[in-house]
Image (cartoon, rainbow, N blue to C red; front, side):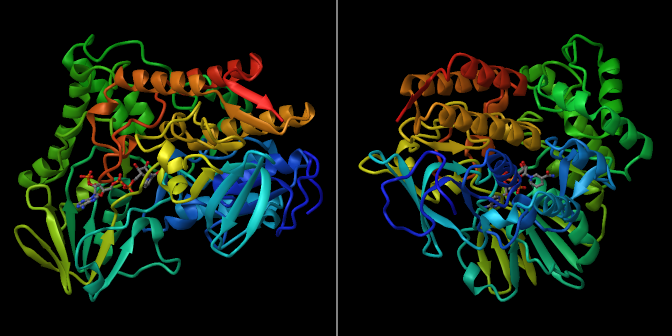
Length: 548
Ligand code: NAP
């Protein structure tokens, strides 16, 4: 294991003692890049990973139809030019198996697996303010002491276990999209029920419908979905994109969502005549992709009347695709402005409801009351099912961290500190929890951006910070409570200036009963956020106390 770059600790003999950094969630996209960077600095590192292999979200979410909703040429690491030039993405959007293959390739190419202990879930992390050490324990009875602890635990990594009564008595098989069996599931000839119509449900429903004898989709809230327009990678597109990679990656930091190539729209949706506006939406609809569509006009996420025009355009599309107009009306979302819940990209989702073996069930008007031995029962009727798929989402953004008992000895736990909702400074650190970093934590643009870019930017910031501390022989960094307070206020004010808070989304914690309703991501844009992060450093780590 070797010594610590920050010098010896108090000499207590514990397993794998004296690493510089412990990484929680080492096998995900964030954990792997962090390991690469930390090893580049020559630091001693140990990572724990709950999965049996690398991949993170792409390891767990193996449901049929799972694919990324960001173009594959963008949703990829930028840190190694050889890697981005050599890797060939076969389709416009990466499928889960393809992305998993890529992540495995990265782990092997940069020899990162050796730092990761797989099949290991971290259960607690306790900071001792006297020695400035985190003691991290796991469900495999490991105990390790580290100067710094980085949570690379992901934002959508705690599947929401369905709490319907009767589930244990169900005689068929049930699955959660976020915990899909590695061997896959064959639904041929089965009566299947899918509960949930977020991204996971919408992506899997066409595939399950194609196999199942009959599919019942249990929909509580209709959501906006746009055509992905996936296609085989165009050779010329790939060539041009790769030639422009360095410039594009750099330019991406100057954009709201961390993806270059979408010129910012100059006009309001209300400034142009209706027919011209619809032509623009038609063009975007044909192009595919969510950012492109949101970029139709400059006020779709800030002005309700402007948003209404886009929302109605999508509703009309649904009515034109779905033959049964009663079903179309149920699928047409009216509960929130388009884009204020995660916009979904699909392939043949609405078309699937034209199949004879697919039935849409409205569980808003008649909620699911219980899972029975042979299916489920709503307030209105019973359904016989051989298999149930829960596409019911995640305890997003805070779930994974709050599952770990994180505390400072003698101080409040993270659960207590976040009892009214998560509070961070820049989504990178939390006041009261020294030497603890988060990657794409609440208060950062992470989930509202190209995650790959945000992961790289956060990791670079954290690693540069560690380098800064080491070069000055400091052992401790913590957030000034006032800096955190002012960032939390800023994050809230920016959110309140948009339409986002109008939706009961997982961004708000609204999908988890009892979770505080706080808009968690920073929606001021990647460009504003990066500028702030850079300024903080330029001003001598403004808002942080460095000591030790
Ligand atoms: P989600 O967006 O939270 O959707 C969960 C669905 O389950 C919602 O339709 C929800 O209805 C429904 N639901 C939950 N509890 C229910 C209940 N008791 N009865 C009936 N319906 C219930 O979860 P997700 O689809 O897994 O997606 C989560 C996020 O993961 C996405 O927003 C996206 O960011 C990411 N993701 C991305 C991709 C991609 O890149 N293509 C794919 C999958 C996921 P309500 O809306 O009424 O709560």
